[in-house]
Amino acid sequence: MDLARLAERVWYGDDVAAGVARAALAPLSMLFRAGVATRGALYDRGLSATHALPLPAISVGNLTVGGTGKTPVAAWIARTLRERGARPAIVLRGVGDDESRVHALLNPDVPVVVAPDRVAGTEQARALGADVVVLDDAFQHRRAARTVDLVLLAAERGLRHARLLPAGPYREGLDALGRASVVVVTRKSTSRAEADALLAALAARAPGAGHALVHLAPHELRAWEDHAGTAERGGAADVTALAGARVLAVSGIGDPRAFESQLRAAGAEVVTAAFADHHAYTAADVDTLVARARAVDRVVCTLKDAVKLGPLWPRGAPTLWYVSQRVTVERGERVLEDSLGRLLAART
Image (tube, rainbow, N blue to C red; front, side, top):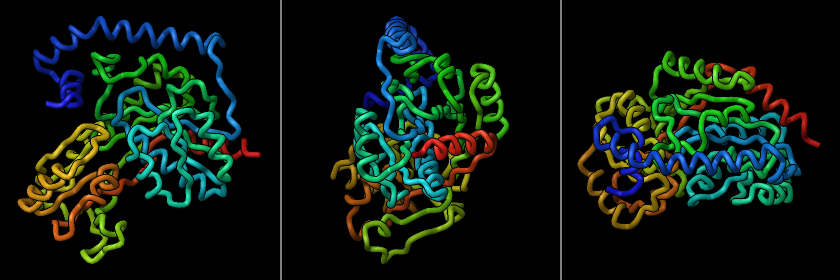
């Protein structure tokens, strides 16, 4: 079992072994909490500098390690800003290159800047002609001031696992929501009622923030060959094509279960091939997946995985499909509209 899977079992497991592991890690989480609190106090008291950015910025971040839908939401915001006449750029830290490649595919006309230092990254974005930036995964990067701070929490995880690293997946505690401009609950497979209940609980914890609910739903199946320039095996299919099909679900993301649940909701019989978040696929991985793909009706992955697997996928193998996601605002549309309006108004 790799480290990422072990961590997920400890963080979210309900068995006795997971509980014992969390208890053993609790002292380290207390030390981590103390470090986070000290760092936060330095910024709150002005002892650590926050730098003004040369462009208006919206941060799309979260409190946890992965799995909240930051990338599709950030891409949706960039696309919306562009549709309204802005010249956005996306600035991200760049753990691996999967997010940057996904952004480039979803918004080919939007510059993507990879920079651990978001201040320097925003300078690069301005040099590329941007007049507004979307900071992907920057909530903890307090060195960079921002116009709007969106914080995402996944409905699939809820609040029962709200423990700090390493005993849980949280990088900051829920009290950090006090810094948020808008708290956004994202849902993939969770019911609307459950997501609404989580949003209400978070609204009570962050009464000064706006609140919104976003649904990330499968939109269509796309064949990777479309993007490799060899579309001889067809381009797109409706997700209803999964009904009754035996599907190999390939994912290397923060919450593979949510992806698998979406496929099951479409009627697929799912065979799981889950890897660690940000997994770097090898030739051996591809050989194994191709062999497994020949025993099912379809092999389907996330877009984040397709940008890494697609270039390695051999000709003659079963078609590699990925699921494109549709972003739908189910609650708080006015709150998000106002936030984007602030960004647009702040341009010079």
